[in-house]
Length: 351
Image (cartoon, rainbow, N blue to C red):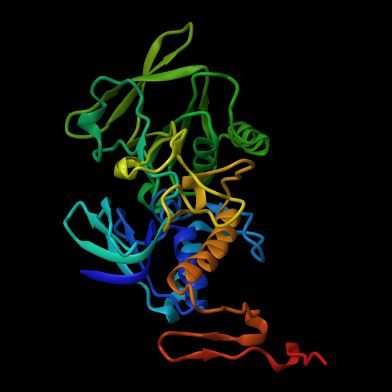
């Protein structure tokens, strides 16, 4: 059985940053994630997509953010159970918890922090009768590595930010990019819509609206898609890949059966204090939680993780008094014996 102070369910940005904040308090962490690598959506869904609202970074790729967070927490030596889903939780008589994964791995923790983002995701698939036959044979619902489409013909379907952004990005990668949307209006950012129009005018994107992909043509793999333009005839477009980007449907999964208070597929927490759920000792931070005024931003998840760790320390060590120190003054002590000293220039003696 794996034992730890804080068991973090979800190894996305919020979960990873929790390790750092817990480490400052000398609390050890172990993380569980159903994905085979840390990073959550940032690694699995859009590693090459830029993020613009991380402090001190005007722009950082989602995958690079994961790498930076992993570098930051390395000194605190977190444990990972990856490729396994947290299935059941059992509260012990002493107030601790045992969490068991779908593969039978047991974890014993004094505190549980659910940082599972929006939960597990399933792609929203278009109603094309034979589409399942072509999955992983030219049909992809998520773009993970743009280089996979190098010098290939790609048809993207959708009208949101992902469809627009990837259509723009792949113009410098694929040999041919076609964007198909069932309406003339798009739901994405206006500057992205303008950019697609510019690329269309320059002959770099083929834009077909209002239209829908109604079928897929090919023997062992995708060879073409059948497109129906509203009010016009149906025709085929040759392609190597068809990427319908209709979004992802989030689900809490087994966590929804843990007796937690759920509201609209999110876990209700006490944001006035410490982001604890209705079950003492279980916290929920990041996109997985909800409370009045909630904003689903990575930045907010970092803030919630910080306050949660302070509360977790008090729960684990009720008789100890912790005095918070700024890292610029106190430095950072790692579990591996390393120490990053604070610059002497910022240390001031208070008379």
